[in-house]
Image (cartoon, rainbow, N blue to C red; front, side, top):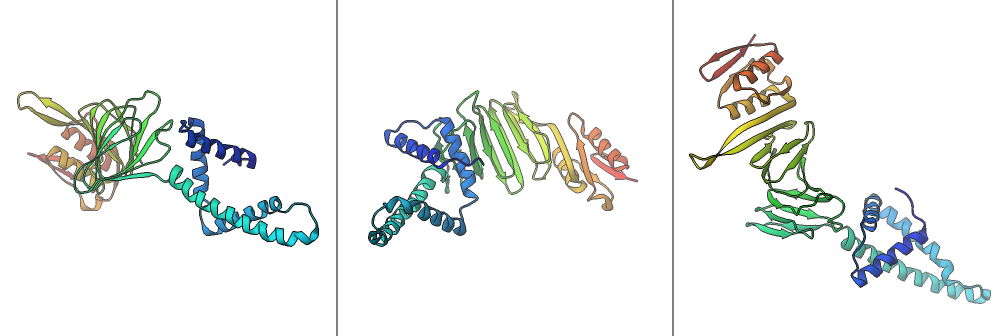
Length: 315
C-alpha cells in the first residue's frame, strides 16, 4: 500500500472528524482511502507492532514539549513531556479502538428461531431465515455493495445500474444490480433461487452461471459442479415443474457424477467399482438422459447396456 505523509494523514483525519460532527456525507474517495487503511492496518494489528507504534509516537512527540530553555529546566520538562505523551498515546489507543468500531468493525445481524428483516442503507431489504448471519461493512454502500452471509436469506436488492450488489456466501458469491432472490446453504449443498431480475453466480472451478426468473442454481452438494434448473409454471396443475437446463462437472469423481445423474434423472447407473474415483470433466447441457450417459461411457471408454430404467456401464 502507498505510504501517506504525516501531514496528509493528519489533514485527512481532521477532515473526517469535521464531517462526522457536521453530519456531512463522506465522499466515495474518502471511503476508498479508509478501505485501503483497513486492509493495511489489519495486517499490523498485533502486540509487537502496537508496541513499536507507541515507541515511535513517544519519540516523535517528545520535542514538542521541550522548549529551548535553560538546562536546569530540561529535566522537569522532559518528565512532563513523557507524561503528556503517555496521555496522548492513551488517547490514541482509545481513538484507535473507537475508529475500529466506528469505521472498520462490520455490523452483524443474527436471526434466532424466527426470521429477521434487515433494512440496509441503500434500500435493500434482507430477510434472514432462522439461524442466518449477515455481516455488513460500515463503508456500505460503496462503489460495489458487498455483504457476507452465513445460512439462508432472501434478498430484495435496491436497483442500481452502476453499483453491483454482491453476496459473499460460503464458497460462492452472487452478483446482481437489483433483483429478488434467495440463497440457501445446507452443508456442502448451495443454491440460489431467482424470483425477479438477473443474477450471476460464481464458484471456484466452474464457469459463472447466469439466472433468469424462475430459475435455480445449485451444486447438488458437490464441489466444482454447477447446474441450472428451470421452474416453469404448469397451468393445468397450478404448480411449477422442474427441468434441468444445464449440468457441468469439472474434475469430479465418477461416483459423485453418477449420484447427481441418478438423482436428477430418476434412474439407476451401474459401473465398474475400480472406476469410481476417476475424475470426470463434462458438460451435459442439452442432452437427454440416454445421451448424457452415453457421453459418460465414452469418457470412461466403456459400453452402455440399457434395461428399462437402468443403465449398465461395462468394458
